[in-house]
Length: 283
Image: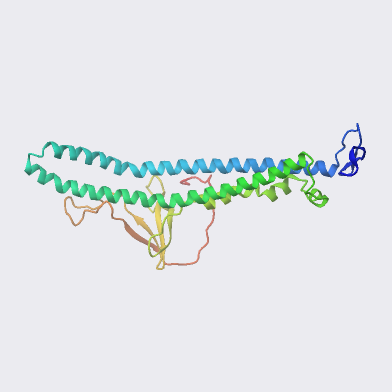
């Protein structure tokens, strides 16, 4: 400020005189390009994170529609039955027959609604976690944007030469600094839905089991496997009556009944990948 307009301005080694064009230092130009590229990559990460949030919300909406269908149909049925009861209130015999059924339906609907609300709780927790992760990405993108804008406009009062010279010059280094390729894994950690394990079960999930029937059209069938402290099991049952013997009640199997078939005791084993191009692969 003491030199006035007659002094010459220096910026990154280049001199700025009256009527002379500003010449940028190569290191400054490199730093500007690097920060601009980092800003663009952060914007891409932010857009990708927002897209993941929209996908998550869509999955949650589909799951909510699926679980709400049962109790909404039940509520419509209850409304109709309540109308019938009001219409036939003069018929005491009919009221006595309908009232217990309505009570049972109301209890069932209350349980269905409680189940639906309980299923929404983990989705709410995961959405909050995903939103917080996206907020962190947005804050990082905004911070890099401020730095890139300052470098682009030559506002280097708060920046020293070490900061300018320490800026990365290659795309690989910039991607590593902004952790560009780690974003999907970070979002998966926050948005992955984990079901509550069955008490006493260590691990459970879907696996493909090869059928022992040589005449089977599909030799690989998907089974639900369970690992507990005693061994490995899979559940067998089609959801329909599998018993033989006509109307014999002892042979009729409930649709909710699933047989647990033991495969083996707990042992150490290795797992190898299956080639997707192999003939007979269920995938």
